[in-house]
Image (cartoon, rainbow over all chains, first blue to last red; front, side):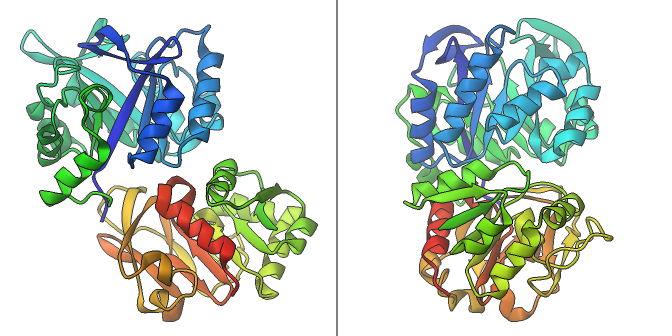
Length: 250
Length: 206
């Protein structure tokens, strides 16, 4: 039996953890190494590190930081942001990542997902999908949420699975940073469309939201605001979920 | 001295770090003679059974690991490292593993997604509950360990299956006999449970 996963997310820009609302109005949320070690000590099931600045110039700085994060934790660790080629992914994995996340680059070049899966195995490839409700459709957004694509979320997720993604990190931009809860209809539709794990992201504001996401079919829940700023701790989250019968680690 | 066998696979440093977190110094080595001199031998691994078995053979590291196992020193395999303890695997039918344990390695036979990835509950079997290295670690309770694998051991002697996971069906995930033990999961990615398992290995005097 697999435990449901609680995954703190570190959005990193300029060497600091940041967190915004709808991908904007970023607030400082501490030092990445300290935060990673703290979440590991609290029993996080995994950690996701997204370099949201991801400029070419900053790649080496990011890799150094990935290496230092990897040295301070004993849990699986996903790195995303600016991975555009197999070589970028290889560099992140050598720096200590266990999985790599691709988003914009997968939309621009869907075959990249297959090349990554062939090079490193499907278990290594997280397809990150940012979704925004716009004009009555669930649009896939890229470039840090700044650019709308013609892709429909559910169709794109299904395609990502066929291309070789090992899991889907599904972020609702509409809910991001709001604390209003995950986008449950989106999660339900996505979980029904693919057999690979779907990780819910965007909107967790209280512990009940984590349970709602599992109920909607998520295998894991990503959260930032709730753990960075709102005082909920991972042990509290696990206790809450265990009391309600969800399989979580002790 | 604990030696971690370096045969060109990826997750070696994290194994050394996880041992260090339990207070143990381990050395990475590519030298078969260093493996021969080690008190404890750890064979980690991520990758392909065929390629890894060839590398172990051409470097002489495989022979040194087998000698350590035969000589009665504690030897532990992790993930692919464990799979290499068997003579054969359906991942590479032409390849020869180290043949330290009776049994073989097969692909998951399931309708569920493969690879099997995540924190899986591990329950000790009756032989596992009597195992000197494992009994106290589990203390009668299941524990969760991080798994990432498409293949798993099978066709073992009953007494060699020390712990099992369940993915549609029950599969062996902690195996061993005498001074040899293997984990299909990654203790180095399994936080406290994994650090404690590696600590128990480092203290094990079979």
